[in-house]
Image (cartoon, rainbow, N blue to C red; front, side, top):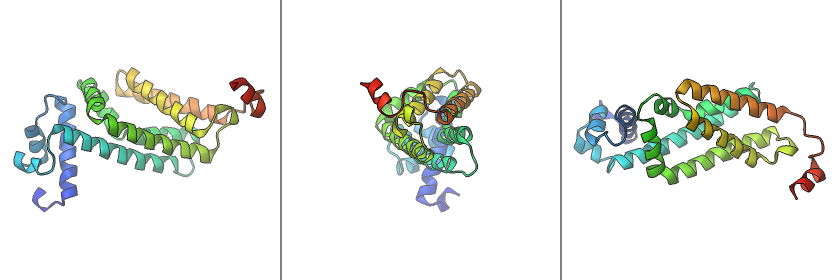
Length: 207
């Protein structure tokens, strides 16, 4: 029963209901009544937790990035994985249930637009945390000298993932694209340095 739930449990129930409603109806068509009904609350009770749809959407973004970072760290540090498997596990962990929902609903473009408009600041902060997590793993694993540093490579990987997100027509296509990115960057990580681009030679090229 919702009456017996803690405030954090109630908020999670509300956010789950909102996520389902946004995926089903889109952001614009979803009402606070829809969310309250899905959460098993009255509209009045819902307003005790959130001011409006935008407030709920931002809270969903905060939860998404917190969970993505936690699950991505766990995936990258899972023992026994080679580079390709670790990267793919991290990509899947980063997505959570969000990308499958977005790419499986006709309202996906609208939800992405709403995300940019309503949660842009939160997304920038969250992506920076995820990039730092990936860079830390790359630094621990070791990056070939001719590829730059872990920060640059982490940024390149996330840019490639964003490109897949924009290009994919459906979730299976998106997941297949992620698998290719994991394979490509794993091979890059395992490749020997390019002759003539190490140390002073590399610096000369950059000048």
